[in-house]
Length: 68
Image (cartoon, rainbow, N blue to C red; front, side):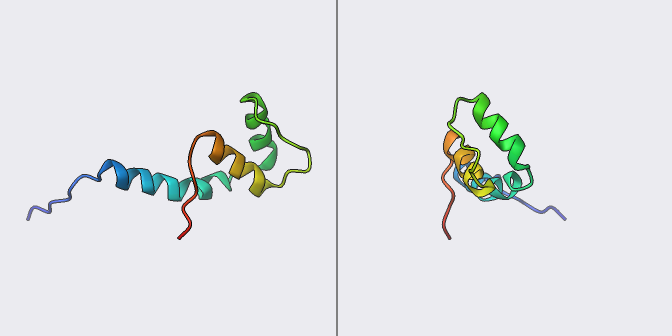
């Protein structure tokens, strides 16, 4: 029996990546996030919380978190 699975559209793929990315970034420690942001020239404060660092990474790469 042949099961037809249509390819995901670009939009579906993008939405899937956007929804998964914050969860993956939460697995990265704050020091690593902070160092990466500094290397990219993004202003980072020593008092920034991990959630703030994740948001800065998302903003830097141009991804808005979906609010569902």
